[in-house]
Image (cartoon, rainbow, N blue to C red):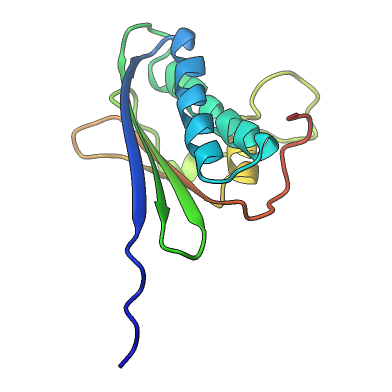
Amino acid sequence: MSTPPPPAICDAVELKVPSVTGSLPIVRAAVEKMVLARGADEKEAAAIGLAVDEALANVITHGYGGVPGQPIEIRIETVDKGQGCRLTVHIRDFGRQVDPARIQGRNLDELRPGGLGVHIMRSVMDEVEYSCPECGGMVVRMSRRIGGGRPQVPGVE
């Protein structure tokens, strides 16, 4: 008879914030605290926080066109099944829908500020998926194994 797997240890936080840049440090702090509590080091926590920041900035800028006070729902969860911990972040907005296949980072050969959010998200996280709920808006789901020794984003200390 085989031994059953250990029960999963889960933590989850749900936040509802308005579409203003002042919301970004609140969400980033929550993400960083959760991954630090699960064994990430400061650099990994900062990189993951930056990826979430970029996703939220994209919602504010592109999903809501910069209109303040629109709803953003975030669910941050960690799951540990005894073989390492996985962080998953769901970000839900109710703004403009975009075909997920068309979401691309800009050409990195272009020397200009901005437009690097998608590249940062994809380089930091193991998975980044976009979807369009039938009732409108967008959902981005990002996940990463914590403590996996993934390369960090250059410049994140």
